[in-house]
Image 1 (cartoon, rainbow, N blue to C red):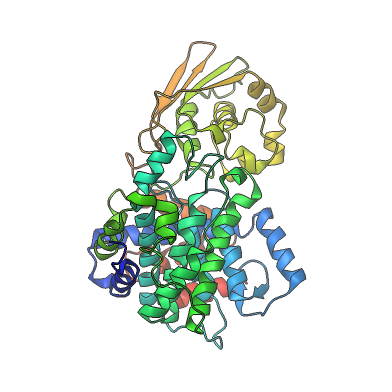
Image 2: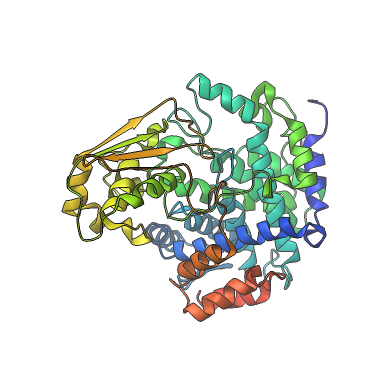
Amino acid sequence: MRNHPVTRQVVEAAFSIHYSHLPEVTRAKIRNLIIDGMGVLIEGLGHHNVAIVVNHLREVGGKSTSYLPGHDYATSIPDAAFVHGIAIHVMDFEPMFDPPTHVVSPVLGALVALMMCDSESSCARRDPQGELFLKAFTAGIELQADLRTAALVADNDARVHENFFPFQKQGFHPPGTVGVMGAALAASIWLGLTVDQASMALGMAASRAGGIAGNIGTMTKAAHSGNAARAGVECAMLARKGFTASARTLEEPGGWGDVFGGDFFDRKQLIDGMQNLRCFTSPGFAFKHWPAHTAMQVSIHAALPLHTPGEPFAGEVHIESPVFKYCDRPNPTSTDECRFSIQFNVVQAIIDGKVTPESFSDAQLNRPEIQQLLANTRLEMRHDIPADFTKMEVHVKLSDGRTSSSDRWPGHWKLPATRHQIEQKFVHCASYMFEPEIARDLFNCLGGDEHQIDLLKVTTLLRNHA
């Protein structure tokens, strides 16, 4: 298997994708991912963490090639990809795959930067109906999903020996490792690279893989997706200019597959996955209902029934959850950390009966009633509850005897998001930049009307807010 040109076969399968030939159920899943990602991007571009990055780029300078909607600013294509990748991930609001990774931010971040580049740029493409965009997006998503699945045996072995690949303090954050590969493949398709060049781009991207899990709960976590988007674009651009790397990174010793998948890396999964595009329906993607970490979705859903309007609860709270050590944050000190605190999310759901983007603010964190109930909240992480987002449960018990539990949320694999919920979320997110009627128009242009994407109109609307 090591001598088999797996990388080339994967690239060839990606290049042969025809979105219009796919089953409608698959096309609908792809459109939903794009719609959700674009909505989260638009709202994320207004986040204060993104403003820090944009201000930094203004200071260091860069070629004004790709427009940043909402910032009246243009920068280089790689730097724009960096901003877009961060913006999509900054609220932890994008979809989740299983095995866990965020596939949208690296690929969509890269493609939006390319899509929004100046018409005189060598990276510009005429793609009014979005056919090239859809092909590139589909391939980039599938590769990330397949890399996670192909590395699952090594991942599980690491989990047993407490030397975690995906999440714990000893490991990597998946979007930084698989995201750069997906972004490089997507950018290669957009830029019209040859199979040999795209294989080189993946080899370059493999050396950019990273993202330390210890930064979960900080501003830097979203930068893992931003770095993946930026590096992926840059690797494709360099490969187009003749910069070389190994073209066999998925099969060779010391390549991406060896480093992250070990001896049990399932290379056949990579070929079969890209040829059949199964990730969109098996298992598919979970869409987040609240702007917080995936485990928080179940935690919030478990706690909401315990809210009593007009009667603030002032007793004690006992929570039982799976063992996610990075989610045990009894005293979060920043809004970024709040998105990863089971205690904080359960408490605010009990007190307010809702969770919104505004819930993750300094004002909310410092509310006396929030702090008081946090002090009276105990989290028990149990090894007998599966630490698996598709199977996990959260149980909440109050000192007055009331209890509530959940193993899902609206958008979970067990309770898939409806088309109406996806539209509602998009319009709400996009309304941070657009009037509601324009947001709905943009929704339809992204495939919300169940037809092809009108990429020309999408870019026009976004450019008008650059």
